[in-house]
Image (cartoon, rainbow, N blue to C red; front, side):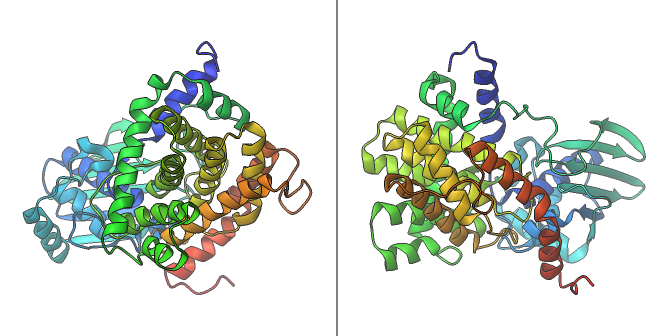
Length: 431
C-alpha cells in the first residue's frame, strides 16, 4: 500500500490509538482513571464515592483482581484505588506506581468511607459515571464509549468539560474512522508498509506482552491454564502458542502488576493477537521485520473484526484476536490474502458462539480455545477444506462473514448479555 493512500495513514493512526499500555484489566482501570481524574478536580480526598456503571462494566469488573491493591476485586476497590493513590496523568497505568503504604491506605479508605455502586441510567453499553463528594464540594465525571473517553466533568454543578453526544450503543466516537478497513487492505498494508511507521508501537507490544506471558508460565497465577496445557499436551509449537497466550492472561487476570499493550480496549485481546504470533515467529526463525509485520497484521485484523461488535458485548473478544492470530500465522508460513481470508472464515465459523461472562481467570482458557480455532482454520485451508457460504452464519466472502459476526455480537447477543449480567449479579430470570 502506497503512503499516498489515505488508508495507510488511517491504519497507522488506528494502531496508535489502540496499542496503548495498561496495567490490569482495562474496565477496573478505567474506573480508577476516572476516580483519579475526578479527585484531581475535587482537590482533596473525597468523603464518599458513587460509581454508576453500565451492566457490561459491572460484568467485567466483578471478578478480576485490581493490581496494586493487595488482591482486592471489584468496582469499589477500583474507585478507591484511583481516588486514594491514582495518578490520572498515567491514564491506563493510573495505579502502576502505588506504594505499600498506599495499598494500606486504599484498604483503610474502603473500611471507613462510603463507596457505593449503582446501575448507570440509560442504555449506553460502555458507561461509567463517578461522583466524588467532600464537604460542600461535588465532582461528577463520566467516561463513555471507550476506556479513556471522558465526556463530562462537572464541579458543584458547573460544567468544566463536555464532549458532546454520547453514542447510545456500541460505537467508539472520537476514534479514527474504521470504515476504511478490510481484510484485503490490511494484508496489503501489513506486507508493504514502511516498517518504521509501526516499529515503535508494535515492538513495545511484542516486548510487554511476551514478558507477561513468560511471567505466567514461570509463576502460579489464576488457574495456570498455560502450565496445564504444557503439562498435559506437550511442547509442540501448536501447544506453545496457545499456552503462552493463556499464561499471559493467567497473570493479568489475577493481579500481575506488569503492563500489557491492549488491542480494541482489551489486554486479553492484545495478548491473544500478539503472543501466539511471536511464538510462531520464533519457531519459524522469522527476522525482526517479518515478526513486526505479522503482529501488525494480527492487530489490525482483530480491530477490524471487533469494530462491528463493539467494545463490550456478550461475544468473547478473544475470539476475534484468536482468529486473527491464526491468520497472521498463516502469513508467517507464506500465505497471502486467500489463505488469510479462508483461515478467518473457518475459524469464525468454529468458535463465534463463545460468550463473555466478564474478566476472570477462565479468560485464559477461552484464549487457548480461540487460538486453537485460529490454527484449525489455517490447517483446514492447508488440507483444502473449508466452511462455505450459506452454512450457518457463514456467507460467501470474508467481509460478509465478518459483517454477520458483528451483527451477531452487537445485536443478536444483547439479551444473552443481559441474562449473563442477571446471573452474575444474582438476579432472578426475566419473566
